[in-house]
Length: 90
Image 1 (tube, rainbow, N blue to C red):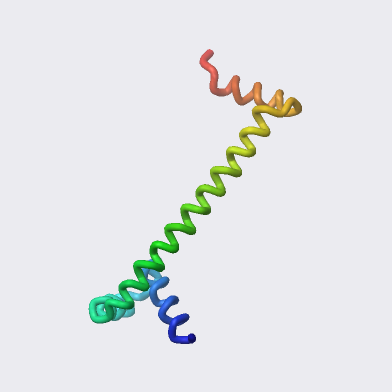
Image 2 (cartoon, rainbow, N blue to C red):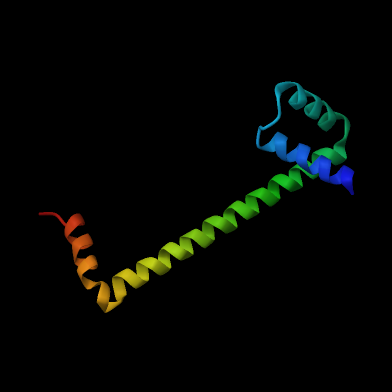
């Protein structure tokens, strides 16, 4: 199990470009020699992309919820009017 954790950390360092140049070259050579390592790196990159997209979707939903509250609830009417005045043509 320790080996897989170390390998995951090495893949992460490579993907995030945190490795030193020498370590980067060694890892790239391993990618050429070990197709299984290349597969693991591809899946780890896909996982990062999914997590990043999920985070973006969550943030968009939170922003939309705030927008709905600010522009529909009566007690935010003065704020709403200030915003509309800022963006309306004079």
